[in-house]
Image (cartoon, rainbow, N blue to C red; front, side, top):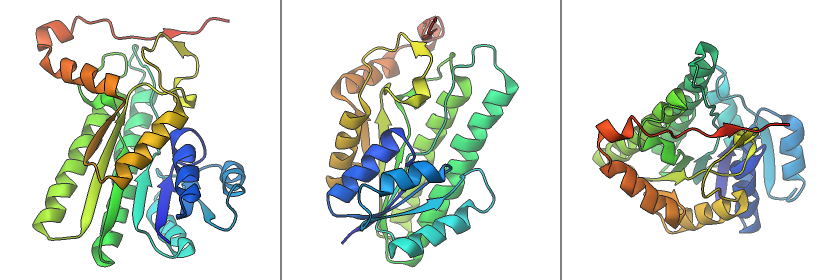
Length: 247
């Protein structure tokens, strides 16, 4: 039985992916900040799922990850689905710093802890949800797009380091388009909105087929390829902002 750890499994893509992995026979350790949601998810597969409350912004998050790994019986796959994102056209400082803390510092803390564990225990597979937002700087969400670009580069750097060190660790960078989850509550106007269940299925496919980078879905693969070709003098004039829902 393979053993997977899913961080950010209380809702959205993380929860759906954890349930799919359990359905495929994995023993899955799930983590997030809300114990009640973790227990609700684990109730679907009580013989295959264990839980641990982890706030990735906390100094004890790395130790809590090791506790969850022990409960799970080891770790073959680490899947990082924890993150936050906001539109912030007024550049509110609290929003920017909170986003950097979670998507930057928290991400680095947890992925680094997983990497060190696998380096010491014969290898494994590290996967994380970043975003198409890391392709170009999005003025509507500066810290979000910047931290997603950071995640892309960090995973690439770790992959190179693992090769140099001859560690048996492989990586998958999952880059979904806009997904209908709690992250987009209160906003409309997002094009080609994806369902979280479909995204989770494609994530599991990418993990099983050992993809290094997977943009979800095919439409967003075309869009992001086009984004990369847009000169900066045109890009900076594009109005890429969603609208707030009205009651």
